[in-house]
Length: 202
Image 1 (cartoon, rainbow, N blue to C red):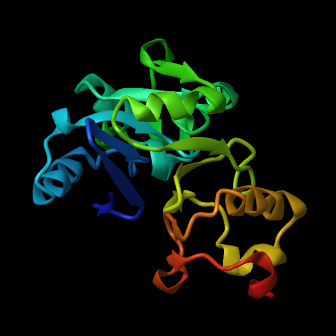
Image 2 (cartoon, rainbow, N blue to C red):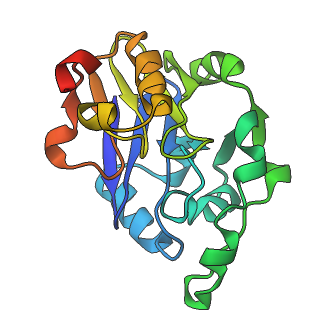
């Protein structure tokens, strides 16, 4: 089950599995109290969330990642992202009031996309993490088998043909999984929902 958790600017998502939950993305630094309020309204506690996964390391997607790691949530990092996790550190550190904490990669669990299916199974989720560059060179998406995909800031499929071949290639990879719904971090509400083929978006 996919639940939207929006507590500032970015739509983040909690995927509930049979043995635990996975949080996809965070919001800006300084939003930890809003996060607590958001999960409380969903009837969840921090301890219910086993893993945190960041679709890409822009500041509005990883601002409180280390705060959550310090609370016991394990950060999954895809190996192709490892050199990118400090991309936003300098920018986020400028506002001292947000108490931004850079990610300590020594505390993260580094995995490959190929290993992701087994990792997701540990919390009772059938799916996998796939590499989908387009918005950034290191973006990933989370596929829930025969159900949905969470794509972060990958440009909506309705507009994909207006972008470069990398975006189209990523959407073709997603379509190969036969998922029915797409969830975005910032796209307009009318873009969220049923996936149509790329040919039908021109």
